[in-house]
Image (cartoon, rainbow, N blue to C red; front, side, top):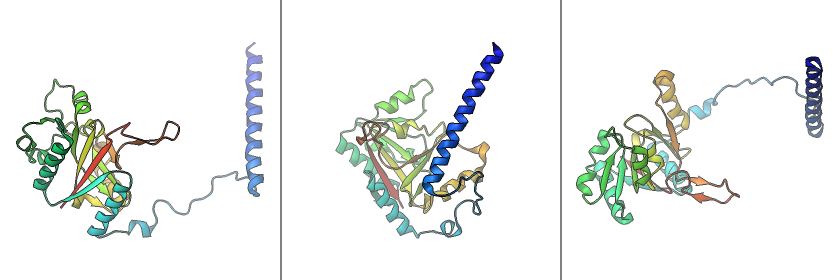
Length: 241
């Protein structure tokens, strides 16, 4: 019985291989070239020199990032310092009638003084209390405030790292996301950001590395574009400096 079963499996495998061969031969015939039986040699590895050497000046980086970020439905504002950031958040909170804001647990964001600016708004600080359900608090928030770790002009993307003080839920769950982007952390190419992770080594990588390129966009259902399904539907990038 075992032998018959093995013979049956061998016949199935043989038929499967024959079908695969016929399929690949048909492709080669339509392309009018012989079958490629070995992996082609790759004389070049990684990005070419002209790409790794490309570096834009500050104003071009800002303009390219702005164009790319806005093109996917996000918003950009230029601010000089954290004082103007605080004022922007306060104004936007009044405009949106926000009642609940959550921010990452960083000193720079503490210095914004949102509690004094917005006494009528509940301000929560991620992971500041051990017995709180912080994912639920982030999901309830009208606005999430995070500090970008890096940004890339060529792709119009912001990089935000996770840590116990910087929960990813702050950027994923609120209705509106405000990202503060220090201009000295805005690079030309994505490779410049990725190089930072190579430098720290695998053992020192953060729990999460998140690339944000505007508001949540999904076309999974019948190619119907929907905003805000898998994350904030409104995103503001504040380029500071």
